[in-house]
Image 1 (tube, rainbow, N blue to C red):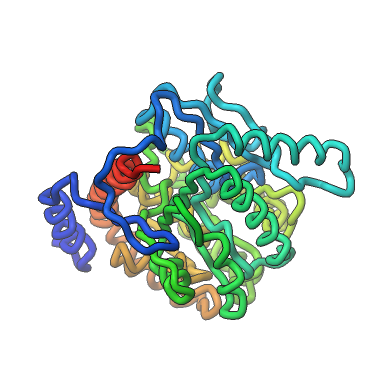
Image 2 (tube, rainbow, N blue to C red; image 1 turned 135 degrees about the vertical axis):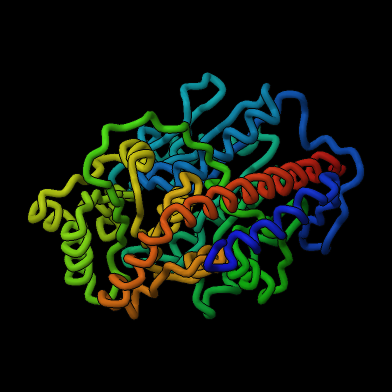
Length: 417
């Protein structure tokens, strides 16, 4: 019998989800309030063209998995669809080779270094939005003001430009599982992004939903697309030292390098092989580049450290445990049914852990190595129980995301222009 309420609560939600009518009505929200989705429309033709605006191109595993899951869903639902994928660097993408995908560079991009190329980027943006049937923005945290090296006002101007173009050409805009993380003084600044005709808003977490509600915008919740990621079953591996993945992010953990070194030393003393799971390889904002952040500890302890996002994604199949700060390291632990220890640095991570009713978590700003050791040893004892519970929860979430996303798009298909 489980020692926590995780599996029991999950099973209750599973039963309610299984009994839910898959044709329940979604309500979408725009400037004129909510509308039931129940009349035939022309948003979608037999071979729609989608323009996808995500955070792709910055060599961040979570962002690339979001794009992959959105593309996979749309491709399965609309086999004849074509895609324009806006990116900062197409080499960062995890999308398969597909003649129906065309990569478009974001505008602006290195404007001062490449002024002539940016004229072409601008024209491409205008022409691509003009020919699109639908503009999809998100998911992930596209609107935020809590990261070092990021100019929020500059970021907002770029999104206002893209949204304005979509409105000018009368294109429907879908915000898909968007994350919004803003200080109070910046919340009203984003209002123009969400007002107007044919704007349909889904958010990935309750905190983002509250942010929009505070400025009078309604929305629906649609969980992070990566929760529907379906990894391949790994081959049986030769038994070696058990591998434990470590996913840290700079700038949030109390006494970060000292505490991370203590975590590594503790795990190695307990017979584990720590592997640094680098999720972000950002080439411009180096403060978010995981590979650079812990390079000294990698050398000191001769640690294995992933060197690109594909390697990071593959290594999850080999892990016994994960100690993670990044949200998508925890989500990937869930979809692989890997018991994890969360070190939460923000509300989005807090909300994810709470949604699982999962007890193995500490706040980054109040981290205590002795409490971590005690709780991790308890997690070791409950390893099999937690793997079972995570697997059950993953099945439930996949089913819920399937129904919710289907109903979201069923609704969009039934709105008249």
